[in-house]
Image (cartoon, rainbow, N blue to C red; front, side, top):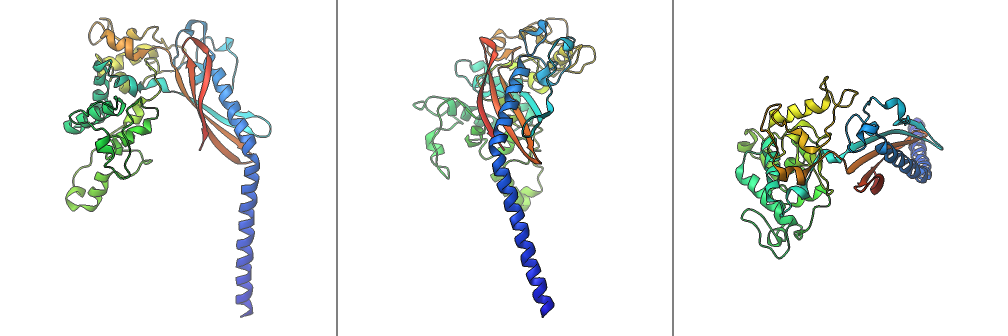
Length: 359
């Protein structure tokens, strides 16, 4: 009995000691929060400076061989050396800075802009490349996104939706009837709402299970059917920021969605900008000086020239929006901060922080 009592008391004391250790760590980390914020903001300011660093011959463009992208240029020796990792500061350090060009994606608002109906082909191309083979679902998504940004006094398209549909959902909500400010809004839109894998991609694990997937798990008939496999999602190829696509940073699958382009032309364009070694981000890169240069002009596969509307409304060689991730560390306590940075189109060295938050 004595031994049992001693063991019980020891367990209680051990649990109490562990709880106190956790409480002390939480209290210490709370003391670091203010310092962490300033470390994160310092990292964002450093990233803003990195974005402005360019070689003399690249002052009118953004490309993957520039310092902000971790690339290597011929003029690297003349540019200031700015580290992007293991930056010692007081009272901690910036573990890493990662800058991602969001202009490598199409802007969903420009694609569904009612003033340029020809741009809708980009959204249709994206769904086709993903492997959405149900033509009815494709039309529902295209119509519903247009209705989501369209005027409130307008009627829903044949396969689209307005307030009468969304107010019938659980919980009910109104159709936005305005430009998309955050890509997550697509998860509220008819057609994508019940198929979040179209937004995230089938291989993503950071989304809720769709109604169809739940039904498939519980139905022997559907369980044995092959589920659709989307190699990427709409979130991977679209963004929301009022920007044009930078043809110097866009990957091949996004270049392929440009009106007038095909897979062969997109691959050819990527090889042109990547130089002799075919790899983006080093000394032999030859970034495009003008968005129309991605079309072969008769020198490679594909048609001799691009549709002018696509070039004027969708494409550029500049990047206007960047995502900056800064990881900070103080005595083993770490946080990752994310910032959205936008460049002033009339003054390239003027960058503004639109959002700043931490995970």
